[in-house]
Image 1: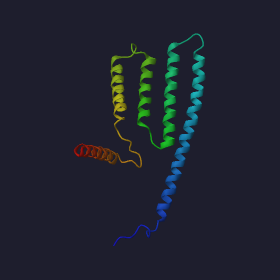
Image 2: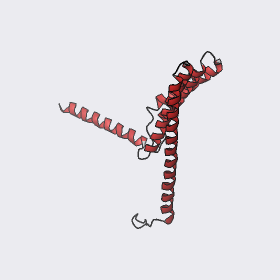
Image 3: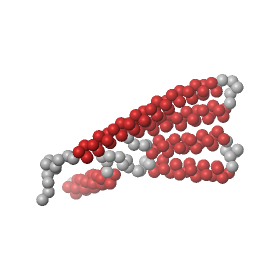
Image 4: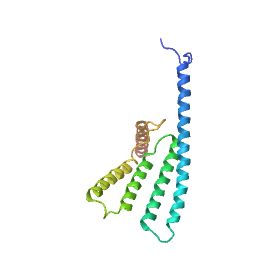
Length: 173
């Protein structure tokens, strides 16, 4: 009635599909590596500009903006490295980049020079990002090989088993 898996021939479509997927992943990795090299080069140029802006006359807003911009670039670089290592985008790093970017804009413009509606919108945006960052801790990773429901079920079973052993130990004493 059923064919065994050993006797089922692998079709040419499956072989070609695997090769196409590997080729596309390789091309995508080359693109991300080129982005990393470009971003790193841009960060070097920004560090040079930042040190030049530290020379007198010192412009506090320009120095602060350069430092925060460098932090954003470092976080973006980290996001690309995580993507190269794990082939996924880290939600936490992406949210952190968004938070630093929003705060940079507020600091560079100045809160007193920004309209109240923009300040309110920025606060709401930062609140949502903060909630996302907070909730990310409890959201299980959902990449290949890990089933979140199965992991929770394992924890529940091990906890129930340890409680059962503990209860049996107390009854035997």
